[in-house]
Structure formats: structure tokens, C-alpha cells
Length: 300
Image 1 (cartoon, rainbow, N blue to C red):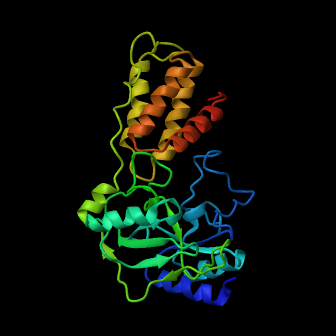
Image 2 (tube, rainbow, N blue to C red):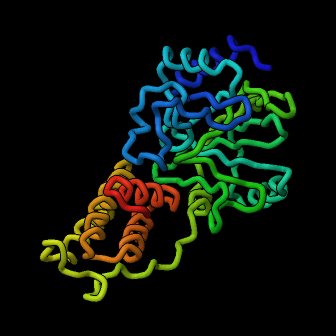
Image 3 (tube, helix red, strand yellow):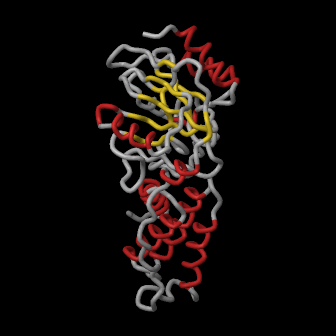
């Protein structure tokens, strides 16, 4: 078990670098939300980034404020110190898992010039976290995603991700995470940035606009234009507002469903396509549609 005083000192040192930190549960899982904070799928309008809670909403609780950091550690004294990766901290972490072939994959990537020497952490389970500077463009996490990543046993932790930080202690092995000495964090080479990008999927199906699926009903004289306006709002939403914009669009389209201007299935299909075109995850898309429809008294 780690010493809380040592952990706090490390957390404050990371914060001084501009790295936002937070606490996971001892199991390395996010701490459960408090009773007043809904999960994203329950209420997509809840602003996780601005929520004042110390431990709710996973990496959204990460901070560089010394007082909040002390309060977070006090709330989760036996937890794991973690870093919010991505643009928030200026980091991209290549996570090497030897148990799933990560060492062999890493050696091949090194031979190909994709993984130059950089700062790294030896994890409590014997893996490696290779730290690179964030390239300034959006870098998605690859964990659990097909068509994205560097190969077997290797995941990318970047925007929307996190990693456990030293001197946390692995809950299963009892070994601490530790920095390799005398290593500086390096830039990601362009080839590595490219390799970390997801494979472009096939174009999604066209949005429904035919007269058989869009009907003048319920006092809506131009339902095709109304639907297009809702979907265009999603497509043009800025980063950080897309989830709530999709939720609002779902409410508007749900009202069209209620007056029979568009079928339920076509509405779901149109919103899902719009969400994917706006680079939203399927989970966030389902949550936004479900929440928007529920707010209008419809099931999704």
C-alpha cells in the first residue's frame, strides 16, 4: 500500500507540470458517481467537465488545483493516482501489455522507427507506459476498438483516456508503478501519429429525406427542412458541445416522431448517422438519443 503523504507530494509535482490528476478506486476503476450526479447515458446534458464533485465522472474530475488535489486524495486515500491523457495534459501514452503480446509488437514498432526512446513508466503488472508529447491534433484512444491501434498488446491512451501514475501500487501484484530514470518525454514522430489514427470507415448510409419517410404533419409544413436543421446542428457543433447538441436534436426529432412527420426507425437512423459523422461514439450517440426521446415521452 502506498503512503498517502508520498502520493500527495507526487500528485502536486505532476500538477506543477500542468498535468491534471485525479483518483481511481483501488481496483483501478473509476470511483462511482455520488447520488446527485447522473451517468452520461442517464442525462447527456449534465456537464461533467464543470461538475464540482471531487471524484465523479472519471477523468473529468482531474485537476491541477493543489487544494482540490488534496481533497480528492483525502476522499479516496487508498485509490490509484491517475493522469488525464490527451490535450488536457499534453500527453499521449502508448500502453504496452506483455500478457497480450505487447513486447513483441513494441519491438517491431521500434525496429520500424515508430517508437523512439522517450520517458516511460514500468507498471505494477510489468507492462510499460511510453509517454510522448501530444501532437496538437485530436488523438483518440484505441483501447477496445477495432481498426485502430498499433498492434496486439498495445493501446493508445490520449484524448478521452487516462493512465495510472507512479507511485501508485498495483492492486494485484503489490508492486509500485515507477518512472525509468533519466528519460525525457519526446515528440511523437509523424509516422506514429498517422499509425495511431483510426481506419476511415465506409461512408454511412444516406439520411432519410424521401417523401415516403418525411411527411407534412402536426402543423409542420416543411418537415424535411426541420429535420435537416436538427441534423446540421449536430454536424456543425464544436468540440465539447456535440453530445449536448445531439441530445437537443434528438428532442426535436422526437417531437417530429410524435406528430408522425417521420417514423421512429427513420428518426433513430438519421440521428445515429449524424452522430457518427460528428465523431461521436456509439455509446454517446445511444445515450443522447435515448435521453432526448425520453424527455419527450418516447422510448428509443
